[in-house]
Length: 326
Image (cartoon, rainbow, N blue to C red; front, side):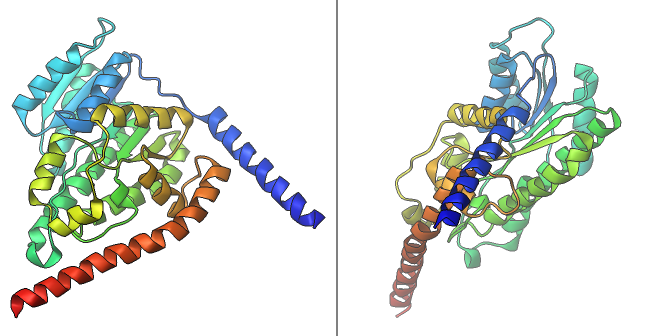
């Protein structure tokens, strides 16, 4: 049995070494006098992120479509000024228009005099509904905003970072639904799975330019977007989700920055998202080798009855539909 003891000791040592390496090599969030570009910065998580960046001395550009909301958001952000060199720039743009996105980035550079060094893609939306009841156009609309809207921004900003030899930072926003899905989210989850795939690919590829990549997987965010989402959400989806229990945009922003400072690539801020992260992490680095491994073992077992439960609810829905038809 000595070999088994040696094996477990070796695993523990390896885990501790991984944790120490992540901590000591982490690039801290250093935004003082740097240009940070935030999509969806007019409300919710994007606005909370922009405020926190400005508090830390950054120059911030926020982009979204609604000009009035952008003006109000810029005024809110301005209240957190810490030095006279800071600027708050807002640009009204449709993030699904590739050419307009390029123009918005160019405008932000002209107004700030700086290429973005930190890029946060917080713009997104969800239009829940049953697959057979929604038009394909809803799926296209969601993919255009959540995935391509992020892709267009990241691609243009990263090209400029590389040309200027800036070792920047790209922070994508996924969702708990980047790692699982169920009834009601067939138009949303694929867009967030795509974000996760992009983040995993770029994490590896952009190392050649010294650019760091992180992806945040928030659960429920208590924001205006959630209120709109719930107006169209099927009852069965609400039943599976259970009681509304989420975090404020400010709490999410705090968790996001904490994860970046720790050097985490895949960042979560609630237990459910954490469990799905460790059990479906793909090729992403662990945040804590020992803890992640233990929690993954728990998750693989715990999610079996959860899956049974969701299937049961869907089958019950089918029985109700059959009764109505009769």
